[in-house]
Image (cartoon, rainbow, N blue to C red):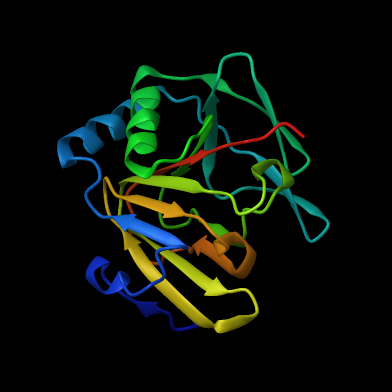
Length: 203
């Protein structure tokens, strides 16, 4: 298995801030746990299909979109119907916007049910996200490693454990020059919810 450089939030500060910003305790633990419980219980989670190597396969995680009422987002050739904002998600969006200085109009939620759920190496570079997109990611529940590697040099790779209630902001040229993933784990894992706030443009 490839070895990744694992660093703590303290060591992480050496990584360029124009690409990644990480706040380990963005949400208080009790607030993060309450939101996790609400979303696990009420969100209309679905398992989507995607094309891989000329085959349609089930994505190894559950997802749900929230955004402005009545909107349908086109992203990467797929059409997504969004659920209207929950009060808790709208409040969190405003909190993230105030803290980061960036604006968002939707949030994609991913539910990693256990260690078998994952997302493969990829870059979020769909046309609808615009050039140099900013994506703000809130993690709830199980700590999972966020791996990222240089697109043109896979030996240049790092891993950051995303804590319960943390905020990770991906920005600048990250989606141009770096790939990221959440790998499968052989260790027992509890559920993890990842909320990725995005600004989706109409094209």
